[in-house]
Image 1 (cartoon, rainbow, N blue to C red):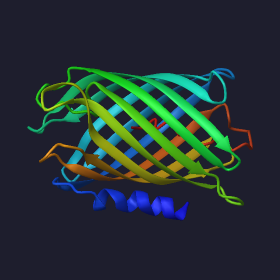
Image 2: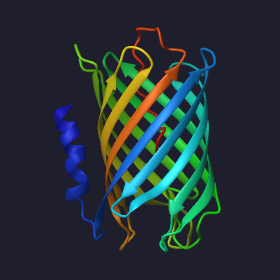
Image 3: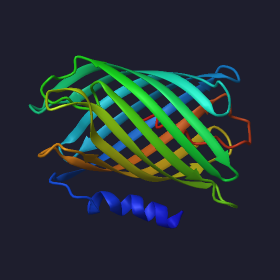
Image 4: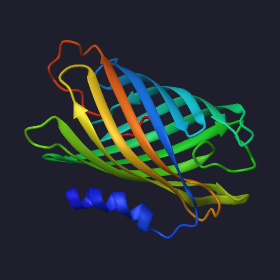
Amino acid sequence: MRHLILCFLLFPFLANSQNSTVFQVWNEAGISYKIDKKQSLAFDLTTRHAAGGLRTFFPQVSYKYKINKYIRPSIDYRLISDRNQEGNMTLQHRLNANLQFNQEFERLQLGLRLRYQYSTNRLAENFEPEFGQALRIKPSLAYDLPKTDLEPQVSMEFFTGPMDGQNGYHLNRIRWSVGLAYTFEGPHSLEVAYMYDQRIMSPGALNRAILNFSYGYSLGNKTSKKPVKPQRDGRFL
């Protein structure tokens, strides 16, 4: 596990890239409510900060359904406020359709998230795969460390979408992530992650080195001693 995490940290920097890198800090706080054994609702608030201050701000509402312990579809709605190249904040509406697959082998958890996203009011000048129309594929791996409440996690996400005015879907971004989750007894969960957002075949575009903090609170779990497991479907991305 140690060697795998090290590879995730070093590979983006070893890869050949003509793009510069900027540093950002992302913060997320979320509340989830379990309707019954299969259904749940969640509300999340995310901010993204760069050297010039606040860059992106969005609330998100999600509905999740558990078909079985392996498959969980969900839908999200986001109202995104993003700062454009002129420094003005623009508004976009975005819908996500997600399909999450999970498989556990004792302490090892494997995950795969498929996402289709669609945005309105997206800018036609940059074809941004994060805020526009895109297909995203995200495999992940987590390990529950014995005798601790810590869970290291690694993932990589592939973004495909329009690029440079071309029709059709093209791989134009890979997001690498290595993080650590802490599972409390009760309703709280906490995650810290380092991510490297790497643009592919986009000369002049900026890569991003990201420090991400995520806090979650599960309503209805105040008295339970069962830890709240961190969400591996990347709710804040």
